[in-house]
Every structure is written in C-alpha cells, then in structure tokens.
Image (cartoon, rainbow, N blue to C red; front, side, top):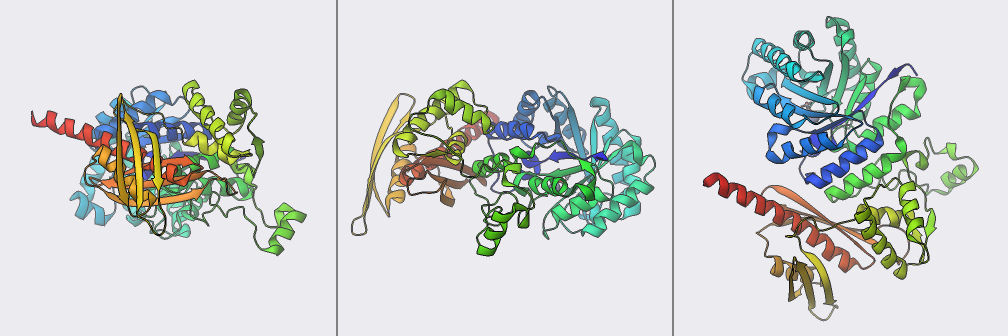
Length: 516
Ligand code: KIV
Ligand code: ZN
C-alpha cells in the first residue's frame, strides 16, 4: 500500500448538530466507544464552546477514548480556542480544529471581514492554538467556492503558524469530483511547504456527490477524509464513512491507500447511530441499508449461488453482517450468551450484561430461536434508568378493537413512587401515551416520528419502536423493544419522555440560577 489515508469522524459534531440528530452524553460516549472499536483515526467530539453540554461531552470523550485523536471545533476566536483546549485537557492525543470562512460570499455577508482580515485572523488563531496544543487542524470553510489564489495565501499563513492538517471543505456540496481533485492538486503544488502538512477533505452531500468528491480529493493527494456514520451532517449530510471506507477497500488498485478501519464494525456502528437518533436505514442505502446485500431477482439469485462475485462486490461479512446466524435458545446459559455477545463485538459492563441476560431469558420463553439480530437488538436497547428521576414501566393493560374505544391502564415507577392512570384513546398506542402523559405531565411538545419495525424474521419477531419528540427546538429520541408492539411503543415513549424531562429540569434550574 502506497500511503495511509486517515478517517476523521465527525458524527458527533457535524452529524450531531443536524436537526433530529442530537444525542445525550451517554449516547455520545457510546458512539465514541464504537468509533474507537471501528479504529477511526480522529473523533471530532463536538464544538466545545457552543454549549455547556457540548463542553461536557467533549471532555468526557477526551477522557475515555485512548486510541484515537480527539478533536474539538473552534472558530478563529480566542475564547473558542481556550474552551476547546480546556475540554481536550485529558485527551491522550488532542487536536484543536480551527476554521474560518474564505469564500467571497461568506467573508462579506457572514463574517463582514475583508480578505486581508481573514488571513490575519487565521494566522493569529492558528498561532494562538499552536501554543496550547501541538496538533492543529485548519479549515477554510466554503473552500470550494473560494478563490483558489486566495486559498493559497490563507493556507500559507496557517501552515507558517503551525497548522499540521489543512482541511478543504466543500461546505455546501457544490463541487464536482473533477473540481475537487484539481483543487487539492493545485493547493499541494502552490502552497509553500505543502509537503509539511496533511491535506484533508470534508464534503457535504447536497448534490449526492460527497463520497465521489472525497475520493477525488484522495486521488488529488488528500490523506484525510472527514466523514460520518450513515452520512449524518448538516442538510443532506457529510460523506458517509461506510461508503468512503468500503470504496477504498473494494478498489485498492485505484487508491493504493491503507486505512486503519476495522470494517467488521461498520454495520454495528451504523445500527447504533440509527438507533440513537430514532431512525432506520433507508431501504436502498449503500452498504448498510436493508437491501444492500439482498438478491431478489431470480437471475441474480442464480448468479450469486453459482459465484457470489457475480452480483456482490463486497461481502456482508466484511462489514460485520452475520446473515441469519442462528445461535442460542431457551437452554443457553449466561456464559454462551456472553461469548456470543463478545463475538458480535459488544463489550458490556457486568451490570448491563445482567440486564441483557435477563431480557434474553424473557425472550427465549416467548421465542424458540434467538438469532444474532435479536441479540444485537437486545444489546443495543439496554436502558438502565439513568437517574432517580427517570420513570420505568411497572405494568400495563390495554383493550382495543374496531367497535370499542381503546382503554389503557399504565403503572409507572419513579424512585419509590408508583403511579397508575387509566385513559381512553384513539387506538391502543394513543390511549397508552395519554395515560403516560397524565402521570408524567410533560410540557407541550410535538410528536415528530413513530417508526415500528421487526428486528428479525417471523411472526414471533421482536418489534422495535423508535420515536422522536420535539420540545424547545430540540429532538428527543426514544426506543423500545419487545415481542409485543404495544409494550415496545410504551417503552419507547417513556424513554423519550425521560430525556425530555431531564433536559427541561436542567434547563429550568440553569435559568433559575442565572436569574438569581
Ligand atoms: O462544512 C464545513 O465547512 C464544516 C467546517 C466547520 C469544517 O463543517
Ligand atoms: Zn461540515
């Protein structure tokens, strides 16, 4: 392999800042841990100055992650850089990622700065950051719509002042692959001492070209790709990690590049991220979508049976999909269960293992064959109450039919307090949600999505319900898993309401403190 191409993952920054993709601290830590197992080179953990929550999650990830560089974004402003540095203090390998816009449009209308001021600001900020941290990445926001000659001057200033990585974003997904390759080649040729720094690309997917543009950047000499799991990111998202990685792995003769990623963890990372944001992969999504390895047409099936390469350019196993592997049942013990979890790439704490094993036992009473998909769903759905204030389901009973009004009786526990409510509703889910609302008494919020799908095949399959609620311009996701879809719906709603209430309570107490 000729060179090493690094994978810089921005799921927790560009991805998490996209509408509907916000995550709480525990969820971010879970994703970061999964990214570490995936062996990404850099985790962009957040934009530390943007909120106390972001600061807290960058700090926590910096402390926990030992095998990746952890980066925080910062504008070319001293306060941003100081805050990023503070948040990254405990990282084994910290990186401050400073950025400033360089296109005429952004400089005039967003920054209200002259080109000379932008160069000066970039130079001073990189210098300031470099005094705090040895690894500085500089991004020229909206680079693909910037004057290339001007870019040479800004980047020269960043390099002279100590940046070691120069990132070229196609911020609005405007570039074509040909342009992206030419731009990287041009900058590598024209920026003085360009061989002392690493060039990186950060492509958005507005015209569906983020993967192609990232790969074209690599062909032009970039050695870092910024991407995100499932392509989450602003608007149409960033280049999907799974696509750029599998493209390089599948066509080694084209890219002649080595990457560190353990591709067998791709599917799990994708599942986890979708699960956390309360979505599922679109049916035709490359690499991780339900149809990515499905061969329906007879002629295709025939070809694949004769030789898999006829219609498969990569195997499901290479991204960690274990097709329908049947493993455990009613008589399987804890040891066998734990071994299978480890084989599937899960590392659970002993408390989580207890919860998961209890769920497995419950499931094996209801379902004869427990597949890997069931085990993965159980492991991805462990939800120990996060605080004393969280509600948990004690029991429920629902009656409904097409000639009666649905009625739900729901009992929830919160700490030592057990509360029961009975309500009527338009169907069993509506009645249950109304009863839960009566107990929790949440603030006015809207219901964004309700997704129900079966985890594996068969009538006795586990059903998973993913919902999203909107409150105070934020999205709160909930997930629930059960062989009973009403129970899965209830669990999912309680999960989302716990997050919403936790957010409301912390924000109310912060506002109170501020007003005192
Ligand atoms: O899209 C973009 O330009 C960015 C930068 C901050 C790197 O996300
Ligand atoms: Zn971006």
